[in-house]
Length: 240
Image (cartoon, rainbow, N blue to C red; front, side, top):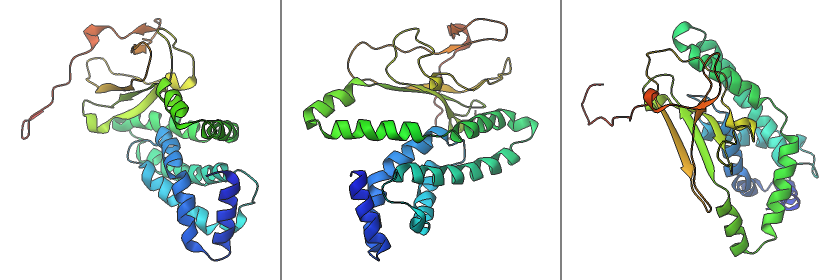
């Protein structure tokens, strides 16, 4: 749905056709949820923040100016809600046992504060270009771009894992193509086990996958195998 159609739909909602707001939600929900998932720390659900953002946007709909970027306006509302949740978690995590999560939440909070107006405009332009293509051409382009995400847990429990870095369309040893490839600076305790995994979507072209770290006082290097061990899936009732 184009911005023009969105503005027309919002005008009908303001005029009393409340049920038309469902079309606005449907047009932007997945995009907003995906944006929020990038920044949400542990115990904050992107779906919940997205839902609250749409509710708040509906309440403030009279403040929206037609002809501007509705998604950017919606993101500002969602960011404010996310910042509120992050601040609450940050206060809870200010103790020694949860220092890892405290640092991670703090870095994600800073990232969530960044102005995304330029990114939103660029995404809108790209979406319009894609819509102008045939379904076959769009499918080829979407399949060209791979996606890879790195997750780390503050302990050995995979249920506590959080995304700390992600990449799209890189070549081997291309570590600095985008800021998202590099995680926040995190301190790992020697001798302690941490759960780590990588999820990768493979499209077309050659495949490659590598995760690097930079030890204190050392150089960036692919994590040596001696520091890694397979994760054992435990049977039901088995003690850790």
